[in-house]
Length: 309
Image (spheres, rainbow, N blue to C red):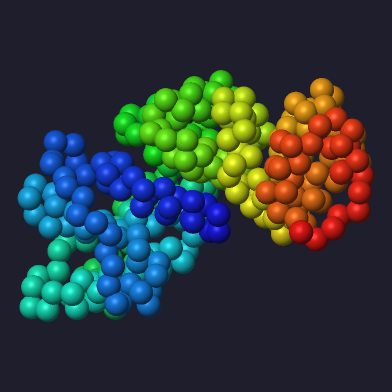
């Protein structure tokens, strides 16, 4: 799942309590003890999505799998992961009972019809009692912004662009809530990055990425220029030539930064030069030029041949 999986796993590791709270029944005290880390998970690195908990004073393990869609291979993957995870927990404490494990598949896109609340992977012979694994399905893209907000954390607000009822006005409120709820500028940058990665998925064809980038830049002037999201999105848009909307959003953002320096929009040739330089040289040099060069110096820089940094 690429950028989305990496971004969400990073956020989850930074805010595990916010992740867990949505999946533990209300009224049950929960303590997050840490992420599963063992020799087995060093081999099967995808298992770093498993958290050790204490719920009602009893040990539990929560495994969260972020899925672009609930494809046919998801039950197979869940069953495979659970096998690795069970082995890891068993090896860590030989002779001790393995804590109960709950798996949740957080689904980011898919069909319009409601997804089932649970999935399963059956391995038993036909006609025999069930043997295999069940897992919970959390189709965040089928939720409303109100439902996501009710989970009580800015972590869940990053999924707002996926919501069925996402609008530009609603996302403007979300951007303001993230601004107020994040503890540091670094955390805000991470949350805004996740917000834009979710907007690029766009399961309901809301087409809000361009407006969202403008909102964030207006709210946090210069913040996006200090994060790698610009360069990463340019590279991804180039690699996935079909995603023209994302490329246009990047052009719009760089164009706005240019306009703030020169008081006018860039010409088509200047827009093309900005994107090509960000792709060829990395976003850092483009950011430095937009911040440091004045007037005609910036225009001349864009007109020069691109020299490797």
